[in-house]
Length: 278
Image (cartoon, rainbow, N blue to C red; front, side, top):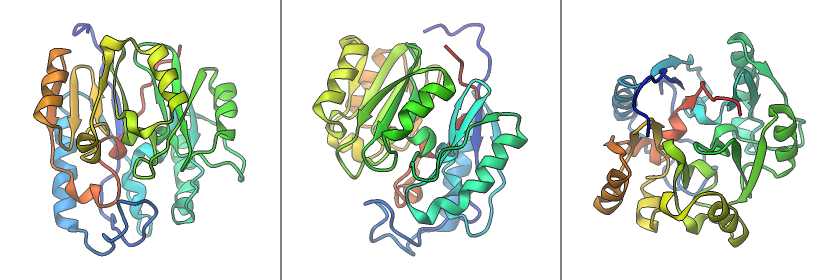
């Protein structure tokens, strides 16, 4: 990896002032309603923000009452160059976020494309730029509908590679799939169907595929923020840390237990605003 002459990335985050777990829209939330430690959540989020701020510029979105999931800025939309496609959420509980998110992108100078009301798409939770090739890995199966994929390809002018999720615990691809600097990929094979795995294997060389096991996947190891060689995540096994280190990555473990109660971790709490085109 080239560690010289870098420009700093801009990462969008939203403080968890109003974060709560009071409904269940994924398997992780079930049983955790009302069990959030809000003070601890703020401490954990602050540690993550401060750690990432060492290697990237942090931009903050204002939190709003009655929008508890706004903290998960990965779901605000997908950014590609100066274009943005805000999310159109499948769960009705998150739809009140949509006008605010669309206006945020407009106010910050993005060319915004709005999805039809009958097509679900959940932003950079399900649409990730490969770090070695000029395509967008785009998921479907739970919270994004495949009908969105052709629109994304047209609007963004990019190749979209559709991959299907099959395990409801991993309802967005960013929960089990993390493109890494230098064209590497950290992923949980058990989260995808056979055809999707074939697409992954045909595009990512074997020596750049870093497969994780079920235990690491359940600890949201793949839900990581990657800035150059730095990886910020909740937890990774010693074996996974060693394998990542062999490829030149530095792992920063940051406890994010309160956000796992809502089915999210480091990557869910961030949106990269600097996504190069082509």
